[in-house]
Length: 616
Image 1 (cartoon, one colour):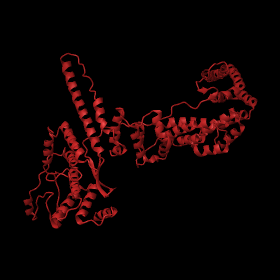
Image 2 (cartoon, helix red, strand yellow):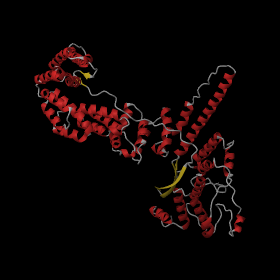
Image 3 (tube, helix red, strand yellow):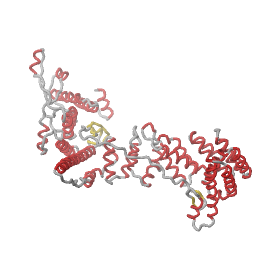
């Protein structure tokens, strides 16, 4: 411990400390490690040094603050200890912690009389913290709880009435002490004072809850009495406290990210959710908290604060766009944040709108790769595939594009993307793109058979394609109908101009399906009739385009399944993008837990500052 204290002095650039200062350094480090009894021993050692050398540390006023905090942590009485107003002014918070420590303990146990020690034979005596002890006494001193009059004196001076075992009185006591701490700790050496305001806010909300409970209990009693008398019960108006709550929350209006991060995770989420529901959320503050939380070892709270920013388009864009979005994508999911895929999807759609299609492909590939992490994995994967297919279909399939897809898209999703490109190339009669995509396809089975059926179409030989359809309709009507359903679905998603080029193909297919309805039986005949209706509707839509007066009417005419078109150009997917960020449900934090009062040091303009940090 002494070596650590010397290291502290060296780090501060100071000369080797005198013995009194060295004892003070050890006391600070002991309290930081929550070895509170050791702080009291250091204080008794300080008394001995003062008695022998008539010298005190330059930090003696702060040393008294250490003693107050240590006694509060232990639940030991502070009677006889001078207030630390010349130090950090922590005595109200120490009394606050002492009260919470002893609230349920009952009376302290009686201690054996010192004269009983003569029976052993040894000597013993009661001592106080201002006493001077011998070396042997310092080695054997022990501490215990006693009756305490300091709290009664303070509460009496503050006019706090009632029995301390009543909840309302306990809340009043804690509020009184915290309000006193507002004043006494208002100094630059104490950080995290928003903790005091947060706890006061918690206590006020607790008071409202206690009042509501009493009101409900009274109403139950009144309801029972009225029913016993045969009357009808009319409930009292709802206890509407929204205005009062809003006034309470106003104390947080000036809080910044540092103030919120001084609170423990559950408490700040709970309080900020109150603020959000009261319509007092500050977007700049929430984004600043997100930025800070991204650097923490545990990033599981990031999603909650993203939810606090809101669900408007502008609020979402402020999260997923720019440098903030890139840093969110770089978070290791092992630290807790698992919604990178949804953000990548938004960034990809933005890249499409800006015409940066290669960037869009990379973002959609990223979304697909990490979709399983998301709480909405199915939604992210479904839209990711649709957008990936849409963007990839805007390109002629080249070797660089195919390399990018193979490298970026997860293997499980790559086959579906490649199948979409194979259909697009075949319907566009782009044999080069068709062959290049087929070469990248490694699978077998149904897709391989569809590739063979589509190859004549990709080479521009519609006649050979239709001849094969006619032949297979006789040999394998079930498989052929299934293929034609896919053909019509894929054709329906193409641009209007390309569909118009396939008018003869559609016409021939509709005639083949009409014949099939006459020769097939049962379910096969029903399927053929349904597909014939789809083909006829698509043909009628193409005919109607030329007769429509407006672009909207032409767009509606193109698609019997209500796909969206602009003129003859198919638009991108219009599904809303997932935003899987929700505020977690947090139970109200306990107001009956002691506050954390920790000694901390930082570099100041005039050297090392021996300061304090308050926390929950």
